[in-house]
Amino acid sequence: MKITDVLSKRDRGFSFEFFPPKSIEGKEDFMGVVGTLAARGPVYVSVTYGAGGSTRDRTRNALLWITEETDLAVMSHLTCIGAERAELEDLLGDYKRFGVDNILALRGDPPKDMYDFRPSGEFRYALDLVRFVREVGDFSVAVACYPEGHQESPSLQKDIEYTRMKVDAGADFAITQMFFDNRYYYDFLDRARKAGITVPIFPGIMPVTDFEKIRKFAGFCHATIPPKLEELFAPALGDPEESMKLGVHYAVSQCEDLLGNGVRYLHFYTLNKSDAVLKILDGLSPHFT
Image (cartoon, rainbow, N blue to C red; front, side):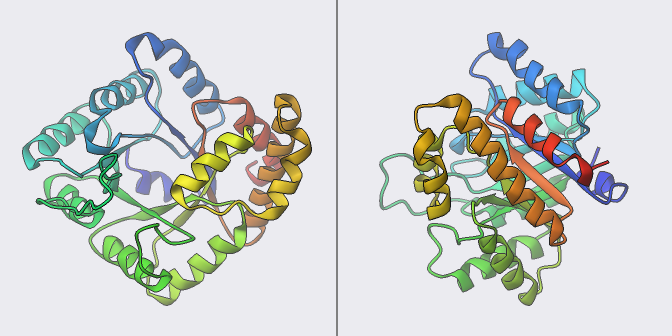
């Protein structure tokens, strides 16, 4: 089931991202979370894929479980650093056979400890992967975008140019990296539209329930933690229950602002947990009924 087909029938909605469990033994817990969130009727769900194909088999297993046990539209993340044409053709063929019709085309992170990394080979950038997926199969293709600019982009203007190239190569829609101040999303959307990018751009929402963990993650991907978020969580550090309440409240407010400003689809980074996302959706229920 192509996401583009689902979008044509739904004028608003939300989606969920999961990462594959580390072993087959994790299937029950993984599918428990998927099933719980699937009951809320997402537009689609996606499963992450490690750089260099490091989770290839685990990602494939997770996608297969979802297609076998649910009727959800499913998207696989796919990275291309270090990939060979033949292995990508085989993997995409497998995906088609068991009903994965959607690909999020990513370059992938550089190998660890390679500070002077330079992409090489046939697949150097996500742009190359978008073209390849379009060439070999009938998939709906998404790409990532970065409201604050990708950490390797020399400028915001260049970042938009790179995004435009990926879209022109055949992307149907884009999903943003997490952000915690909606101004970054609105400014990015303005730059994108002025650059002629017309595809839907879904905001990626990361619920903040463990502030220190999210701060570390945000530092890695160069996403700004606004002072108001620091101040909000300062009294709750070390208190999981209070952190959950604060994180849900912040995410609901963030999403309400987005929805009130014309956003129709939200993409949630679940971290394979359902509690916070369910509470956020409860808070947003008037918008999706």
